[in-house]
Image 1 (tube, rainbow, N blue to C red):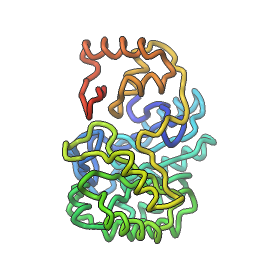
Image 2 (image 1 turned 60 degrees about the vertical axis):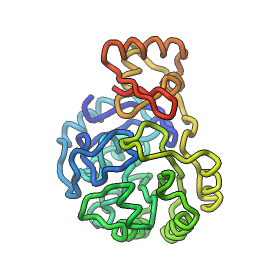
Image 3 (image 1 turned 90 degrees about the vertical axis):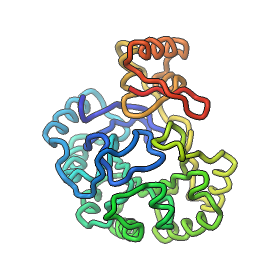
Image 4 (image 1 turned 90 degrees about the horizontal axis):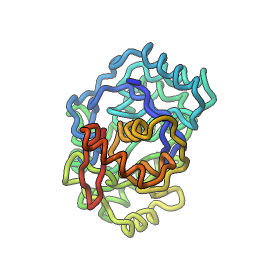
Length: 304
């Protein structure tokens, strides 16, 4: 599969079939914390980055094998950069009863046509981590044509027209956007936007830049208290569902590690497989050069 990955167990979405419409690493941001790595193509103009007919063919093949909980548009770049995202969402809604989620950085929501493409999705999960232009540029290193004020206005406009679930993710980095005044200012703006949920996250996997330092659990709990009942901490949240793998364990391990760094424990939990068997398989794949090991905050992570 080129454009479809999974289904994989998701912390937030249960069993999720991923759809990747953007070549790596094309994005409107170059975030310090990105687990996929540094942005190599910074863009803000939606295009047909990958052929939609090929995406649809792969979707048909995977959906014929079973129904995931969600079909999730995410992956190697910013999904709203694909000009036919709306068509892809509509196709999934037509072909299956699975729900559709879009994980987006929210940067293009100031464009009415981008908001229009999202209206048929069941869940949209944009990011808003600060209301300070200076901090915004330090964390996200955005395309020069983007402004934080425009992005916030885009979120407000989406909330007015969108009838699905809107979950705003707040990515928190130590020393950047975790101060009391910054959190309170962000709370006020998010309260005006009125999302269904506020999801607090921090750096869990190896980031693109070593300056991205995670918050500890105690600080996350304090910030959750500031946001109130609508907030939840999703950093290191337990996986909602598991899937029993079929075929060789090595193939299942590679599929799990294909899109993001994972630990041995992540893989064993996701595949419901014995830890010692996963360890043996991972070590063999590292020795073969099929997996790469990197250490982050005392843990070993593996990527394809």
